[in-house]
Length: 174
Image 1: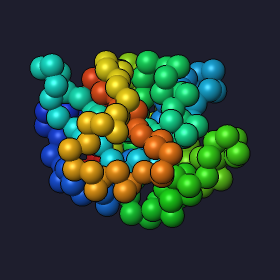
Image 2: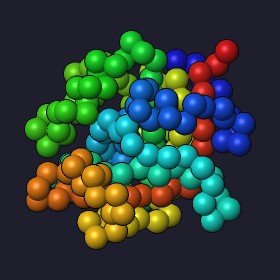
Image 3: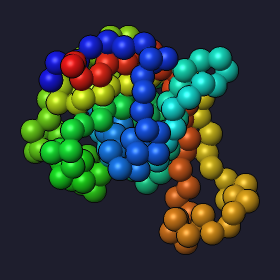
């Protein structure tokens, strides 16, 4: 897909829709050496923190992608047109632990992105590339609304939160 580079400050999105309905592929690793993994994410945020543009994502410790997020300094978020929804479902339910290069099974093409080692995907209509600047594990005792704990299994598996400074953004060309 042809995309144009856009300043993150000029990007206009419906924030609730882009996460809850569109979803992103979160990809961490190093394209050049072929060591990366991707997973579908529907929880996160975009904004400004510490006077820097950021993307915030969360990954459960049980997810294979967590080890890539911890080992590598960069990650990408790739959003896709509606016709890729079935592919995103697959990539969100099948682990890279079990299926190597699972993105190939749904016909996605990893591509290099400026300023980061993590790949994005050529079929994406929006790409946000980030460098990690902060992480923290969620703590059960910090949930003020205890009904949110219903989103977790009895043994926990509380997400790790990552903040990434946005370094590069591309959007589908008009």
